[in-house]
Amino acid sequence: MRILVTGVSSSPGYKIALELSKKHEVVGIYRSNPVHIDGVMTLQRDLSVDPEGVIRDLRPDAVVHVASIGNVDYCEENQAECYRVNVESARRIVRESYRIGSNILYISTDYVFDGLKGLYSEEDLPRPINYYGLTKLLAEEIVRSFGGTIVRISSVYGAGPGRPNFGRVVIEKLGRGERVSAAYDQWISPTLNTLIGMAVEKLLGRDVGGIIHVAGPRMTRYEFALAICDVYGFRRELVEPISIKSLSFRAPRPIDSSLRNEKAIKILGIDLNNIKGALEILKKELGYR
Image (cartoon, rainbow, N blue to C red; front, side, top):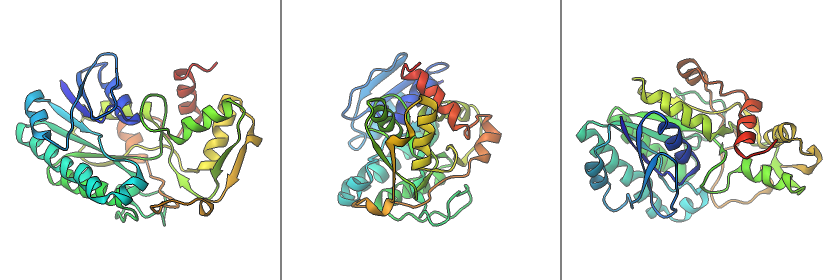
């Protein structure tokens, strides 16, 4: 099967392409940050210019659409650009993929929820509180209208390219003996990008459709940082608990955007709740002993 993965220079896109390449022919698209992935043909393309042409030229059997503007604060201040990339490009990619008969799998986010409830299921009603979340929800609705599969992920961490992620930053700073701050009153579902790649590979071999949450266990950022300390042997006292209220963001953040993952665990057979096991996988990938 030939699979097109957009956004391969992102953390989840990189691992999705890498995992899929073990069994399939994979073509990865990036816009501005070149990336080399063993076994994957990577191409530079601006999907906001002619996404239909990319789909027509490659004629993939399946499209995994990861690419988006994911900087939440940037989206809040650059809404026209964010809409063009996150919604309009998605619409054109999905429509052309559907036209040529390609399966569609879209990577979305926990930020489609307002964070007032926590442990959101696939059936809960989305209510984004920032513009980034709104654009991802609008793209979800487009994907659903064409019968595609939506994979919501949360607080992605792991090895590979892309913007610095919380887990990786904590590991690097603690490894240098530096102090880190982590919110004790913001709940997330930290998810290893390697597990996301494994989940997507399994999903493409099944007719699941609809929405599925591929996310780790519910915990605060502070608890996640302490879990890193325990697995890597770092000193717990280097982690300073702070309140999310003490941080200033341009765009509001959900207080509890954790996701329920029972559906994914049952269908895919991946232990998404084993945070220690996930951190051990990353430890090996990063070359720690």
